[in-house]
Length: 267
Figure 1: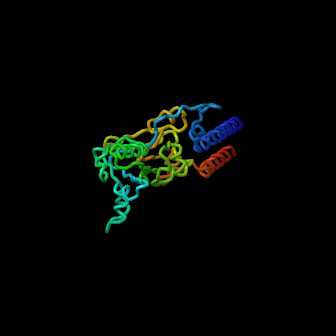
Figure 2: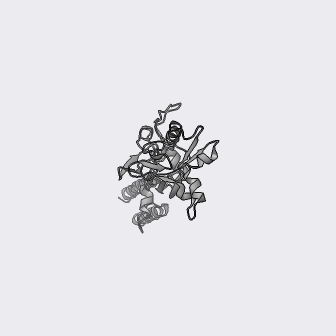
Figure 3: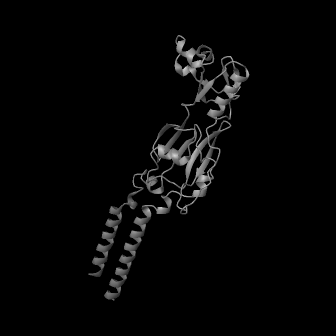
């Protein structure tokens, strides 16, 4: 009878060891939840969305500079020149703010609708207005939007980041913020986007190629908020004892206790 009990205890102990090994491996998180676009085949040619340039919307600020061989005449159209020469006016006041109707109000040219236009399209439109009105013969128009930014919170750093270019996809945006931590949940990245005065949530699975490239938030827009939530392992650490069962020390202690009980019973 003692032999039968001993064998049974050995089997039970072995089962515990196997179970603990599986639990520890699971606690580390499977590789398929960590690798980006893991279904991407070798030598793949991905179809990229064509229209991803930043487009102006109400509330955006932009700087417009107009140059010409006739410098004095060109200065009449430059708000920055007026700001620099005015008392108590800073260069920041030289920015045009897109109003709720989608317009900006320029000196002499008056109101110009820029809502939905790219930076280069605004430059072309202003140049056309100058030429068609015989206001300048050789205008060179430059438009910049240095105040545009996106935001990242969660398991990918925290901060406000300026756009380095007119196009920025979600992978590039996350790389600017420092990439996702190993504890970041890649299968459910949240992007909050303002549309028609409402914040609209979009979810992106970074482990799935089609989900990334077909997403409406593949290209990041101004004021987008990217939130990377923690995976279950990281979430468990938020409680006092929530992650204790995930530690190697806990399972080692439990296994030691089980072995001790087995030895005592067989004596």
